[in-house]
Amino acid sequence: MRLYDRDYSSLTPDEQSEWRSVKAKETVSKVGDLAITVNLFRDYPKAARHFTSLFPNNYLDIVELKDENRLHKYVKRFQQVLESPQVNERKILNFINKNQAYFIVGSLLKDRYSFGHHDAYLFPEFRLGNSHVVDYLLVGKSSDGWSFLFVEFESPNENITLRNGELGASFRKGLAQVSEWDQWLDGHFSSLTETFARLKSQSESLPQEFVTLNKTRIYYLVVAGRRTDFLERTYRERRKKLRDNAELLLHYDNVVDAAEKIIGRETY
Image (cartoon, rainbow, N blue to C red; front, side, top):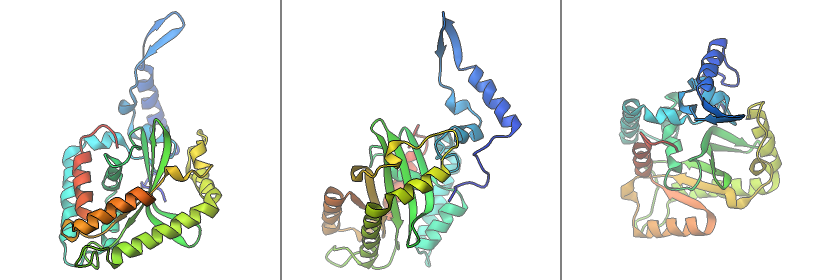
């Protein structure tokens, strides 16, 4: 369930030394016993940025958003995957996971949700018990605390909408899964807490939002189809789902747009 090849729950001696060196520069002066400090988090070695986070192996590193040339290339390749004749949801997931292009998923938080700009984490193929697997779980923090976004990727090109704009089989399938997840959370949130406890940093405690279910902090997102599949009736249904059930429906061109927009930004 971790995102990266290496384990960020510990640091090498060289990484510890480099981290201490940067931290020493955070104290710029003293007034009596009061230290005047600056935050040099972005200057920490990458491993230390992960190590100091709540979930070291699932942290979405904000510094990498500044690697603009590399990320733009990933977005271009992602578009090529979407345009390929045999594309399906599995090939899309494989592209993101094998290339560690996780910023594409993380970008879905920006401008659509009010959390994630203080801290953001991504959990791929997140299991809910033995029966359900969520494509991606995004966990984000704001000044209001922590919230959770469960993401399901469906087909980009099959049975997206009907001729009149009503939702087709792909969206209905995704929404059916969302309904099952929502019911599962009602009775098994403590199991989720146990999973987070295993994945967190040993030096951190789980915030209360990870322990007690609060449905106002739970959101769902289903992605299917392309921009041309969405008609006025589709957009009306999307607004209704978001208003009534905290369920957002997007097409893959929305994902491309979000990924392009997040590049160069300061946070998710």
